[in-house]
Image 1 (cartoon, helix red, strand yellow):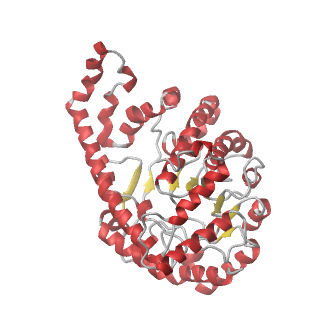
Image 2 (cartoon, helix red, strand yellow):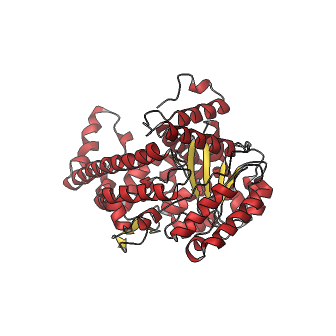
Image 3 (cartoon, one colour):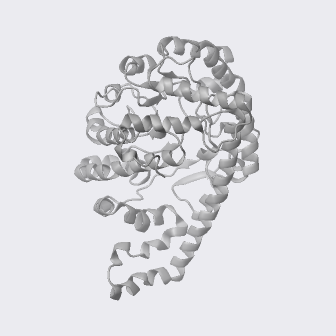
Length: 448
């Protein structure tokens, strides 16, 4: 999808303005009434102002949800992933009762039937490796072997299809037999290249792949209906539209695993860097494509292994930051707004985030456990910041304690703009009265 015929001639700022214009217009959304449409537009403007470090009418209140709406709606995590009618009822109830400023898409919950069809190995999920009411868990292994860096670097898509996917999807294991598509070059060789495709187990794998595609259609139709209804009836835009990752996390989370990538920093540092440099433009393209598809400027990037306790400062500077910075800059050049969820603590990394090469007023940094006063000091005149109301506060405290924390947080870092009130980590459990206290206090006390 192209945003305009002369897209390639536009400046990054012009692309940015066009993406926000498209978000504001919400083409195809039939709002319940004019009042809801005006509310939607005011919210988009509030968020745009806060991104640009302007003073909005009030602090945006944007809770980050995982399975909490399911729990609040009276269903368990497994039901949320398998029963789309129950998922719908729970998500509509959450948004109606709590009235956040943005949509918490049920897209992030995922589809149990789809994962079952593919025999997904990378995660355990409710009812498949975890209990029915427990969120999913990543199962780290070395799904890419250390000696396979060159295979991945030379042909990322081919590597994914013939090595990585057969290892993380049990149903696609026979794809290991497939020849590279680049073997299809001359008439005499076409037949030989196609032989593996005719093998019964490979054909069965393709049938499972097609079946998974049908499951995906059923799921995305349900998600679209749920999110669309919330948007149309409550006037809530979404900040999680596009998706991308830091190249270090792409390798460390799902290819090599934590242990594997940390060993590679010492045993294969040059190959690791080369692989991350190869992945950076792929991560940019993915973020731009998904944001464009969802008619929004925002690209969500969760940061995992750059946290203070994972890497030394020297290793962060060498391995993590350069390609993350490349991804951030590449997204901004295409008019996107990186919406970066900084998991854990980044108290030792804030000088990197304030890099003078990154343009002012084009990024959202949402923090988990980072010292917010320190974040404001480094980034207050540079980028929008958000966070860091903890999950433990929302679960274990009393409503007045939550209100006091939120008031202090706003006093400390909201200033004349550039701050989003949010919880520090995606929420699975909380006390409803505490979450309501956070949202209501943010709306009332956060007025400028």
